[in-house]
Image 1 (spheres, one colour):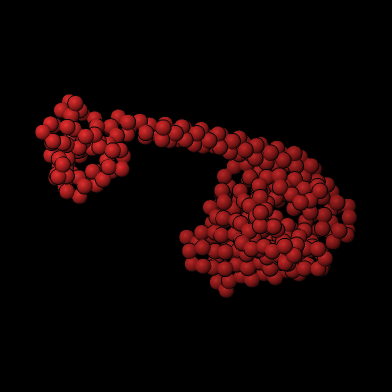
Image 2 (tube, one colour; image 1 turned 180 degrees about the horizontal axis):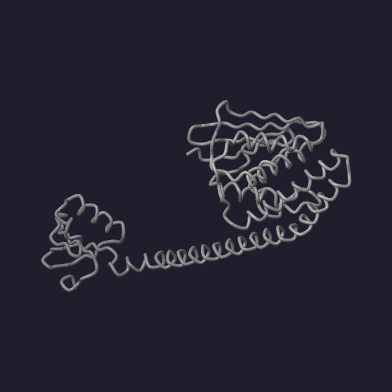
Length: 314
């Protein structure tokens, strides 16, 4: 039985405990006494030895381990589960990719349709503006209307750029931030104060100004909504050599920790009439179009929130 055994590791000892035979052990390590001792110890733990009676009061003891076939069988369920797990991960990745592609198509379709629907009435309004300029002498009245029409035109342009990869140009980030905040400041409540802190030297980065101003406006508008009564919004630009941080902080009602990531998902809103697309668009513009990051840097209920945008410096 020992001679024709090809799968079961065995060690045979005499009565004095000396090894007189070994079979089916690792041929490359069998000359190593430590390996042999470790194998023998494992066999002793596995089961009691088989006593071989040779007659004339001579005995040998056969120690054995599990066969290589049985050992392989113990690993088979693990391998099988691993294959199933890999299959599930591939299936999930394919589903996730397909779902993301479908969402992108929805974004593109929604953006282009919105831009298309706004285009016609804006063109009409621009024509009426020219007529008003000729008919009315009140320049201030016409001027304000003209600003609002140009604003609608700007919004349409933003939506048209969401549907495709926008072009980025080298722009001074400080100027973009100051311009966006200045626009909001003139159209916000007097109870809310704005503070803008920029760097002494220009920070030139590849930006799409129309879309990035939209990002700043979305975050600031959410900060304004979070402030109940009087409050302050602080926008800070920090140059950190490799990265540029833009921190937008308020002293509003704050965001619970469990919702720090949820606020950037489509459909999330705390407003009765909100669509929950503002911060979702913000995340898309910053991360997909400008290669940056946007997240809740700090927030405490009742104390305020700081949203941080990170852009690559180089």
